[in-house]
Structure formats: C-alpha cells, structure tokens
Length: 344
Image 1 (cartoon, rainbow, N blue to C red):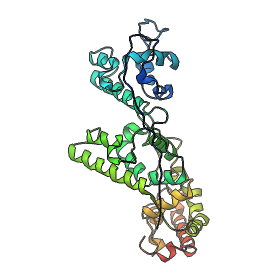
Image 2: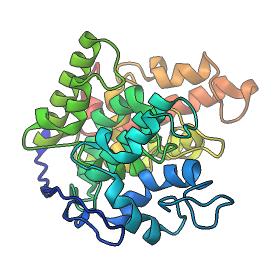
Image 3: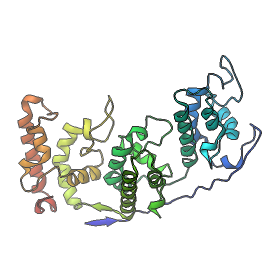
Image 4: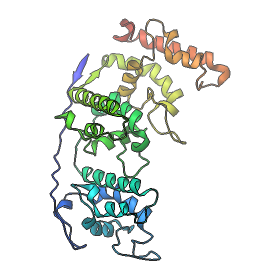
C-alpha cells in the first residue's frame, strides 16, 4: 500500500465585531464576509418569508427593507440586524422569538435564522481552501462523505439554502460544500466545526450517540489529512479499467455513478463513478467482489439471485450475472495485485 500525503492550505477567517445604527454603513464585522455567502444562506430565507412586508414593492411595505430580491440592497440593509459573534442574539432572531410573523413555529423559525447566520459567517469566500485534486476528493469520498450522507443528509443534501451541502448525493457538490465551509480543521481535527457541532448535540441523538459521532469524525478527518490508501498499482487499475469497469459504467452508472438521477437520489455505493481511482477503491473496499470465487461475488449475486436492476431485464438476470462474472475473471487474470490477493 502506498500512502499519499494530503497538504491542505487553511486560511484563517478573523471576524471583527462592530455595530452601526445606519443602514448605509457596513460594520467591520461584515467587511470580509462575501455577498455570495449571504446570498446562499440568510438571504433566501428573508425573501421567502419576510418580503410580504420588508420589501419596497410589497403590498404593505414596512422598513427595514431587508428582504429585497436585489442582493446588494438586502446586504447593505441587513448588517445592523445580525450578530456574527452571537447569531441567536441577532435582532431578526429575537424578533421572531417575540412571535413576529413566524412562518411555522416561532422557536423553530428563530433557530433556522440563527443557524443560517452562523453558516453565513463561516462560509465567506476563502474560509477554507482545498485544492480540487483527485486524491483529495478520493480521500473525502472514501470515509467522510458516506458518514455525512448517513447522518446529515436530511438537512445538508443541498435542498436547504441555509445548510452547506456536504452531504449531497453528488460527490463533486459534497466536496465543494465541505471545502468551502469551515467544517474541517486538518491541523487539529477535534476543533473542526463539524466535530464541535456534534459535541453540542446538533441533530445527532443523545449524548452517547453525539459523542460517538464526534469521535468518528475526528478519526476520519485525521486519516483523510494523513493520506489515503492507494490500492493496487497503475497496472491493477488499468486491468480494472479495461474489463469490469467498462461493464459497470455501461450498465450501472444510472444509479451507481455518484451523480444524481433524473428523479432524485442515487444508490449509495458509487462503483461506476466517472473517476477511475474512486470507482476502483469503492469496488475493493466495499467487498463487492470475491477474488477466490468471482461467481460468489456480492455484486454478481445481487444481480443473478436478487434480480437487482438487471441491465437486460428480469428475464435475463442470470446471463447478466454471468457476464459480470466473466468480466471480473478477466480483470483478475490481468491484475498484478488483486489477482494474487485472496479474501479482499
């Protein structure tokens, strides 16, 4: 096994506190917070829930006009009503807690606003810089991404404008979500915001469950930073690429490519991912093949016995499974690593 070091450049975001009584003045606290971050977090909530009164063109306009669709106008006016240091103390949050035109349940709405301000403050441009490198993405996709999907996808799948989409079904989107937020601290994983949120009990169950998930995140982030496992050699991957990989891409990529399906959702194991490196690692590390007896491979029997999405229809599941078996045998026969390795 070869281990490749991951070097990540972290840019520390320093937020300076300040306040202002004028809508036209932008306090120092927001001088380094991008409009782009605001436009993806708090702004959509204001437009969706507050524009009926707090926009200039509303039927019953009422100042402050913080819910304008024009992002520049909204951004210039919102600054006196938010606190980046203490989001829950923001005026727009406490106002909702005072039962000011809540759109669902006031406490819940206030929490959503507070979370959006928190995320806004942590997703300014260049908070964290991760190179979009195949090895980095493969490292993210190997352990952290599946755990995020399992535990965080209810909110962080990209459908909620207030939540970074690091649990998206799309690996590229999830990687962008994790790399553009302050969720990860590679120098000291235990101080990662992702970990701290679990330690504070953020949507993770009871204290025991939250502690276990926080510890799991720490371990995985540490392994991701240290390096990712390079399974096999270039020749091994080439053998996979020339045989079974082509077959699964042709027949399984609609669900197992890591890309969203037309009607939403994907199968969790992306062994037909467009990235050969990632597909190769996933195929091996998920015990999908049996090097001792390819006919007994999980992936073969899932088609042949369970009749799972047989490429040529349910009447041809056995022949499809046989084709898979032959492709796996061809892969192993031409593989300089796995062909000699049993019980993968």
